Length: 462
Image 1 (cartoon, one colour):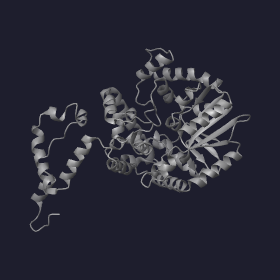
Image 2 (cartoon, rainbow, N blue to C red):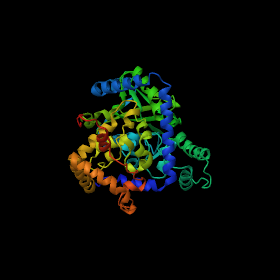
Image 3 (cartoon, one colour):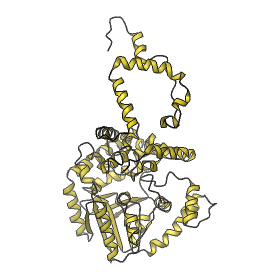
Image 4 (cartoon, helix red, strand yellow):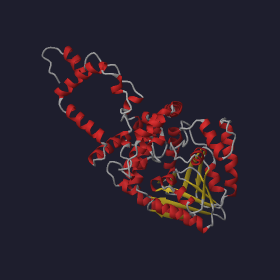
């Protein structure tokens, strides 16, 4: 399989300047709201540390807590299934739906079902899947994957949504009012929910001591998907379990503040068992998580609570858009999760980063994201999966930087020549770097020469 071309995808998005500017401003606004919540919570750093420690403890005792969750969920009347991979997950879902003769499944947002490519699997077998989350529904109708973990269609403008709805829901193509568009989606989706015989939700957290599921949403669609039909299916990654209800409270305080800069989600719903006369199924999905747990450098990524704070702060993601990553998980967290699933396909994503560390600074569970990105770069290089041009450039740069004398000579030469180089050499279709950047003005002298001039007689040249 050919590697995802993130540079090409970024060029496509950067060409739509209005969309790029909107995305940048929207996500940076969320980052600022997150910072405001952080400053308004004196114990914020303590909460982050506690959340990280809870996750680390749980992941290092994952078998124990998953078995505890299963025992308590079964005692609550929930049917529990175990899925080794995406194929097993999809087969289980299809089997449950077939047994109940379900033809339409309504579901709330779930990154795991996107990861498993469940929707096309079921549709190929005659089962219609209806996304009830507004952003997911937009993306479904436009036949695109989500571009963001929390706000799936954040890269679209109102007029884009108007075109999608006019084409698929037959709405007024000239009406771009967000309230009108949201209402049209609600009016066309609500009858499908009311008539559905099966609903599906994802899972933000699962509590081992109670065998319960917690789902956090802002639209109420998850509650409808879970409570209106008699059959409720939960798709849950095995890393979502936490030991106790007391632990859950820590994550609830961090999740929405980190994601949207709001104190809490509009709906924090707890599902402990099936509704009267109904059924509730929970599918515990591995799909590569156990393998990642065994990776010395990358198991920390399993702490992720899918808040998207790292995406909102990332200068690369905010300018290239989520679709350019070619994966369900984009941004900094995607750059470390995706290669663990398919290194060849996603070998370019660890290079979609400036390694500025902002992602690590905002992560509510203190995942060392930028360090893991750097480590993946080392692995990509060691496995000879670097493009020839990048490999050649890095090899040349390595030789120069390994020789201080040569490095200083090259630096002096570059400072002299850069202002004289014709623009077409730096700014052309072959140089992606120059498409949205200008080379800064060259300094009059290097730091080394400046320092040498000010060095006192007798001082050692460190």
